[in-house]
Length: 583
Image (cartoon, rainbow, N blue to C red; front, side):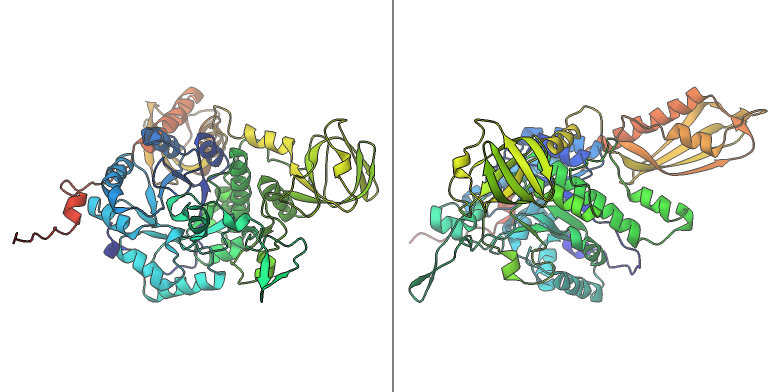
């Protein structure tokens, strides 16, 4: 599809469910995302991406990765979100041909010259405008559309009000154009794609995937030639991490197409944890926003249709009190946290955005040290703690070496908690009354998260709709559809016969076709059209169910076929070099 064929907007009161887009720095992260509910992942290869410090994937792995993702109903986007030097264009052309041929679902691009090259090579391969393009307005969205982009990742600095304004502008022009918004993860103090600090200070360009994170360092503040006393607030350029959980309903109402989680340098446990939290939260939001539908049998069935659940038990963190929001906040803080905030989504509040007290991972705040004894520290705790958890003691000097260790025993004494450490695990001489205590490790939660993606069998199942037709002396026909639009039809090898006792019922059929354990599927909607009292052996019903799974997996695994223009090359895109006569 070229830029001019963007579909016009269709007016509708229905809210569309955004996709959950998770990061994947390597295979375990990809599996963690898939098994915890991601609708799509984004990942880099070994060249031209903004996270060159990640393990990344190789070009040779692309076909296998895309087959795995598509078989599980998940999309895969390659990041090509750096600026490309002219001397690299030939290499970039071959790189792009590999990506297109592998059936990747889209490429995320910063360099507008690369957008032109992609559209020259292929008229239909999807291009997503990276947040590195710094698009903050409707005019920016229209420019991205004009150079062939099918989706824009808005700058993190956009507020909900500004997102609404962009959508309203597009609606007024009858244009339906997908917008993607970062919903969780690290925030830069500068506009992505515009920061030159890392390159200026250390020769490592953020626009070449080598950001040195200068914003996470402590700074002195000089005003009128004099140093300002900052106390423990020296991390003046280090924002808290973005957490948009509280504004998910507003993002859905704003018509956002994709909710993006940052973190291609993070662990698979982080990916599993954050993806799961946002998957479950979004499903709750959609269940509340969608009106009851008679065809779905009411709101409870709608909830089930959007509740893409894992087969393993929900990961129960130690924090059991209060609302689900508290539980989710605990999980997100344990995943990775420099402090959690809604970023710019609710507008500008610089004092809230940058607390300036530290620029590295902390975790869950437990409380302050009130007493120290032999191998024991007494804390006035604000959050649960248990043996095996890891803590760090914060004196307000994060750049200095901090004391910390794993807890051996916990004894609750009213509002205070007595923490016992191993004899050689902690140097108590470096712990002081008044130190802040952070919980940095929860091995039980990590173990539960690892279980979600380390097994061989699918842990996360997506719904399929099944419709059954049957008449006496005719084969039973089952039609199955998945969310990606794949449709398969299977027929029984033997005809239905009249039943004198125990005829097939809708409940019996639904029970047999819902037995989808150890597959990527679960039964969503189910409709049957049986004429009269008929019967069919259970073994044949089971065979039909297995055949549905086999055929759907086969259809999903087929690579997407994007069209490469036969005679298009970099050289045919570039203007001809003028020739000048020799004197």
